[in-house]
Image (tube, rainbow, N blue to C red; front, side, top):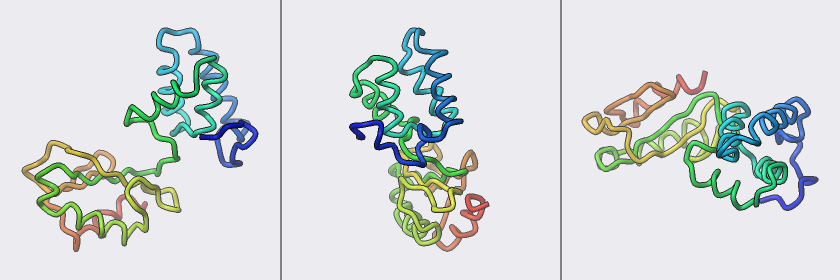
Length: 168
């Protein structure tokens, strides 16, 4: 994690005046609420789209709480992310039925097609690739979920066609 706020990357929301104003507004509006740290982080995630390491330090400093507390919340809850996300989210289920059904081969094919590993976003910002444990569609294994759309009984040779949705 960054030690000093002067080391903020130029692309970080804190370095962009309009986004920093939004961050300051969220902090000001929510700092006195019960559970303020969680409320502020939730609002930042919803509004900015992610909570960078620099933003975590900034929130901790402004709310007068330890940095570890803010980082602990961000790292504990899976809905928080520390990197920008793509326009679309591509999730590969790795629950038992999907794993046995060939989800690993789907992930390998997606890495070829999209050019990124799970946990990362494509260079064009169109898709973030994730692995999840179970989506509750075991009878359709293996499953790929793009945004809210589920694609069951997916096969590597059909995956490029499925992924077109995440590329537009």
